[in-house]
Image (cartoon, rainbow, N blue to C red; front, side, top):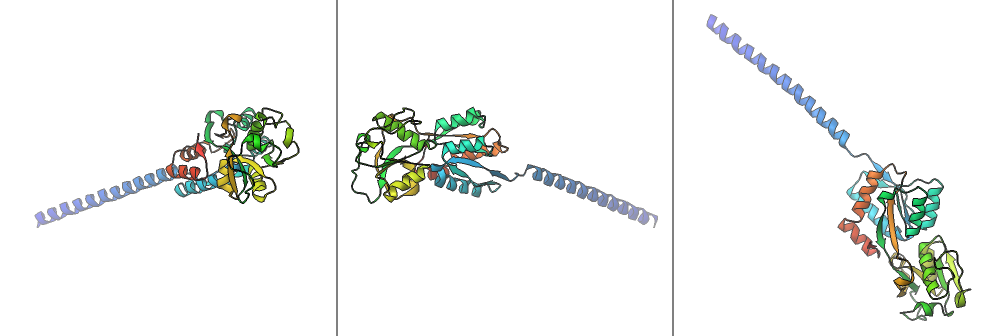
Length: 289
């Protein structure tokens, strides 16, 4: 009888110890799980909204690229991207407008933004190149394909170019200077001369310039080759010789005041390396620099 009691007490003690160990184990496991959950929460990406200032000519392509990026990175969204003439975007930065990324259609306007202290210069790089072309309305059969600059300024045609805030207009005026139809080599601050002195219409965006040709308001418009893809309704008469104007380069950079510099850099890196993004740029007529 005493032996049985002793055995029973031994089993009871063992069972109690086993229960205690299990309880401790459960408690420890719960703490470890909680710690893992807390760590995961701390490591989760915070939602970010990026504000981009970009040249007008990028609108269709960049909208598609941003949409694709958000699909793959749902924590990153984009505010209403500001598409305007590059010079106007610099003026907005000067006036205190906030942006994370600036993509200009010319080195000169990016230089102005850098000089104003609005750009983190270490992040600047050349993103795209483009061509300057002469276009006319799609249904216009009166102007021969292969038109030369000399023929364009003969006085037989009306012309539309962007005003001084529009890089495409600056490039066009540089080209016109080479054939004696504009008075300043820089493409800014001059006057149209010779046979086209009273035959040139200016407009505030390259998109509007393209529309003048599409509607038949003018015979010829100077726009980027990408604008032909972007707007349609026009056809290319000829590509303006590259040696008649400065190289058409689109620089990009993160702004000095950006509070989302890391996310901005990640987006720009992806935009110039992801195969699907590269297909979009190519579809809209842009080539990586």
